Amino acid sequence: AMFHLAGAPLLRQTFSVLVTLQRAGSAPTTNVAAEPRNVQYEVLSEESGLPEQVTFRDYVIAAAAYLVNGVAVAPREGDEFTEPIDGTNQTFTALPIDKRPAAHPEDPSGKRWIIHTKRTA
Image (cartoon, rainbow, N blue to C red):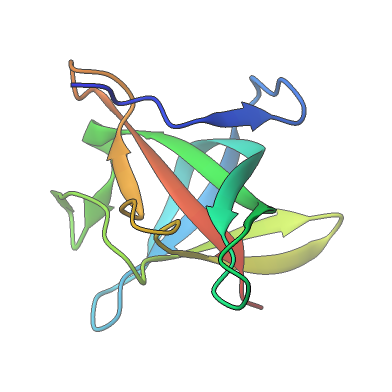
């Protein structure tokens, strides 16, 4: 099975940031180490049906650190990540890309998740 999406990182970022993970109806999980990547994906436009480029902020997070209410869980659409950027808290929400899920394992080992997000606040 292929886990790699046709996405090209705009900038090779290997640093980690600390984000707050929030799932609706659950307590927030703070200080989650995440590797942010701004990635361009090609999707089909809903209006024209033609391919267009969209930029998502992908987070790479260790599966063992993806905790909701203290339990390691799989990411899901709608999970929110708050990241301080330039002194301002910005919120990114896990969203699917086209027909692809909002999150998937980085590789077959399943040790790290890649979560696709868009800024929502």
